[in-house]
Length: 459
Image 1 (cartoon, rainbow, N blue to C red):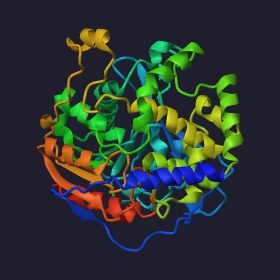
Image 2: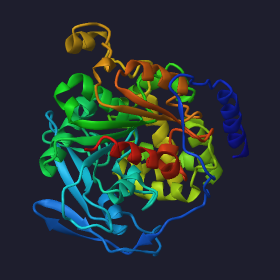
Image 3: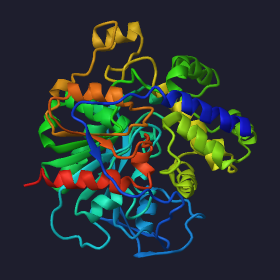
């Protein structure tokens, strides 16, 4: 156990020495004291649901302070538990995937009167809408935006917790998993945006994305030009388009992603970490290795995303194990064996990210292999996305210690987007990729800046 921790920290120290600086168009974002890594937040009593105009609406009581750890709620249940109104809207993509979009129409202290400017928030890899609310009121971005007067729409994608249905296919079918970020940006995102625009009656909205959520925006801007004029502003946290300088060990192991996928197919499964005896045994094996050690979980997360113990809310890790992963789907829940939530986070992260970050550049269309590329693109090599087509006011937010969206790659991206309005380095040297979601000081260092900038683009 100790040797694993030491090895992880040694690798972290070695890799961090290669970090470079971004010189051009850089603004330092945020300041102030560091947060308490063991800080908690106010929570409320049990939520209930009711139907509202054909839309699943859940309304919870005002916040109190009961124990939350024994509850297993989905995203709507969690939002309602904190006293906020929430709706679930199911959209169907052009190719048949059914995806739930979660809406917080107004803040906990507001009424359902008057129109509000919508803001669409999109998660990254291995994530769901729960990312933006699991931190609780005054911490979670979804709640912060609602309390700031916005109509908040939180997206999901095909294949995640809230995108496992299809008009014809089952998750057990190989064809169900035949997709990449291409389809998420070109098909999933438009379906969700159409629902938001129709429901709200608004024509303009803000977009906030993290990690893969930024890739989806680049894809949409290139492939679906009819949506470009709807955006008021785009805020990219941990923005990804190229991974030439990625420090995370994911980049070293990613070339073996195809072999991993073939092994899974050999066992008859096409999704990562399906619920079966093999994955259950694998989960128990890793559980034995981890010894349920909190520090092991921390070190592996840091190894993937960048070391930042001061911003990691240790208590929130347990909440993520329950709210982000445990209720999400049977195939993710299988890995913990109902015994070790920390292990589940680690294992799902490793396998999913390995196959998400392969040798291809993320600013290219997905590389299906020469034969399929010829059929899909008319050429053997996948074409690049044209970032010069982006005309939305774009703001980039990045961390010096982000091992996935590395500063050098963010700098490259900043030079490709003609409508760049701001390029901000978070004023916390150890800020990593996941701190944008769950960092103790995320509100003070990032979210407050985003809401201030959004107001500047509203007439």
